[in-house]
Length: 276
Image 1 (cartoon, rainbow, N blue to C red):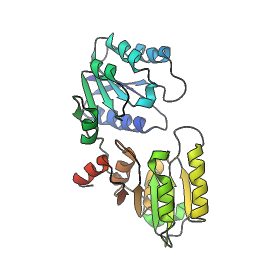
Image 2 (image 1 turned 60 degrees about the horizontal axis):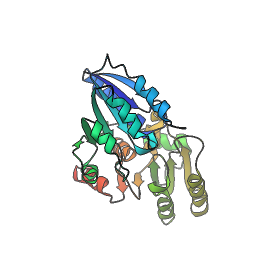
Image 3 (image 1 turned 90 degrees about the vertical axis):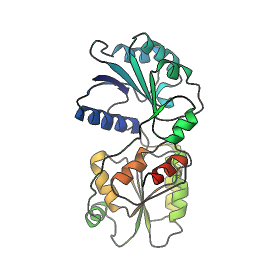
Image 4 (image 1 turned 180 degrees about the vertical axis):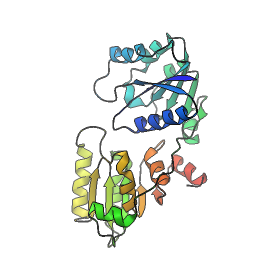
C-alpha cells in the first residue's frame, strides 16, 4: 500500500510527532508513506492549501490520509476538501480534536474518519473508527545523572511537566499546588510552538518566581533526544489540563515509565481503565 499523508512536518508540533511515529510504524509494515507537508504556521489562503493538494502524487499512491486539527486549516476546510474530492481517491481523515466547529465537508468527503478514543467518538456523533494514539516504551537517564546534568540537588523530590504550554494545560494550578509541598521543586519542560513564548507563558513564569523562588526550573522546548534526561529527573509527572481530547505528552510520560497524576478528564480516565 502507498499513502500520501498530509501533515505538518519538521516543526515543533504534536501532530508532526504523531505523524512521524505513525509513518515509521507503517513503514515497518511495508507501507510506503509520502509526506505532503502542510504549512503549520503563518497565514493560510485557499491558494496555499490548493498548492498542498497539487503536490499529491496521485499516480503513485493508493489513498490520501489527512491529519486534521482545527487550527491547521483556519476554517478553510471546505475548499481544501473540495480540492481533495476532485482527485477521486480514497480519503481518510484523522481528527486530533473534536470541537464544535462545523466540519460537514470533512466528514462528507472522507471515506473513513479516525479518532483516538471513545470520548472523541461520542463527542463527534458521526460514524468514526477508534485507533488509539499509542506510544513506544522509552528508556530514561538514571536520576542521579539527570539531576547532575540539570544542576539539581538529587535529594530534592521533583514534580515535573513536559509538553506544549498554553492556558488550557493548567500550569498555573500546578505551580500553586507545588508551592504547598515543602522541600520539593518543579521542573517544567516545554514551550510554545513557535517563538520564545506567549503572554500566558510570561505570566506563569512570573507566578513561579513569586510562589516558587529558587524551586522552579524551566527547560524550554525539549527536543526528542533530550526527553530521557528530562523525565529521568522527574519523580512524578503531572498533567492538570482543564480540557483535553487526547494528550500525546501524557502518553510520552507513560512511555518513559513515569508515575503520572492527571486531571480526571474523560480521555485520561479511559487510559486509567486501560491500565495506565
